[in-house]
Image 1 (cartoon, helix red, strand yellow):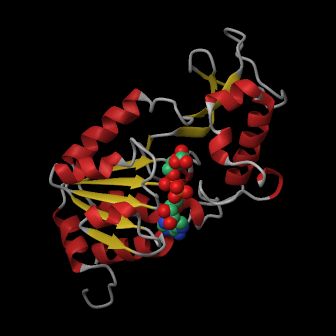
Image 2 (cartoon, protein in one colour):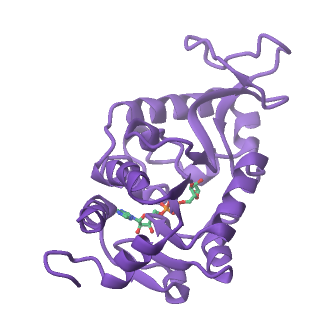
Length: 246
Ligand code: APR
C-alpha cells in the first residue's frame, strides 16, 4: 500500500499500465443507494414473493398484471434513489484509463444517471417496455394494468432479461470481446452465481487479464482471482479512483 492509499499497490499499478479495463457490476453496486440486492429479502407487499419466481416468462404469462405491479413498484423504488459514490467513481474511472468497458447485470439505470456512457446492459433495463411477442422496444401507457402493443395487440412487458431467457446478442458479443481484450477485469458487487455473466471473469483471466473482485462478502470465485478486496463498492471505488488520480 502506498502512503494514504488503502488500495493494494499491485492493483493501482495494473490500472496505470492498463490499455483496456473491463468492469462487471452486480446488485451490490446499487446496495448503498438503497436498492435491495437480488438475493436479499424483499420488503413490504412483496416480502412473500421470491424475485426469482417473478422474473420469468412463465410468471408473466400466468399473471401479467401481478408482474406489471411488481415492476412498477421496482421502477418507483429505483426512481426514488440516487446513484452512490461507487457509481460516480466508475464514471470517473473511465476518464482515467485509455479504454473502459462497463458491463452491468443491474437494470436500474443508476450507472447512466451517474454519468457512465455506453453501458452494456447485460440483463436489460427496467425502464424499457417491449412487445412480449417480438421483443421490439415500445412505450407502455402507464394507466393500464397490462399495457398492450399497439402494433400487434400482444401484451407489453418490462425490457429486462428474465431467468431462462437469452442475453441480448449485442450485449453478449460486446461483453465477450471486452473480457477477452481487457488487461484488468473488475468484478464488483456480484455474487457471481448467474451465468453467462459469471463466466466473463474466467474468460478475462484465460486471456491474460488481472482479475479483481470487490465485494464485502468474498465469493466462491474469489479464490481464482488475482485479488479480492473485501469492502463496500461505495467506499472502495472512490478510494481506488483517488489513488489512481494522484
Ligand atoms: N458493495 C459491493 N458488493 C456488495 C455490497 C456493497 N455495498 N453489498 C452487497 N454486495 C454484494 C453481496 O455480497 C453479493 O455478493 O453484492 C452481491 C449481490 O449478489 P446478488 O444479489 O446475487 O446480485 P447479482 O450478483 O447482481 O445477481 C446476478 O442474478 O438474480 C439475477 O438477474 C439477476 O442480475 C441479477 C443476477
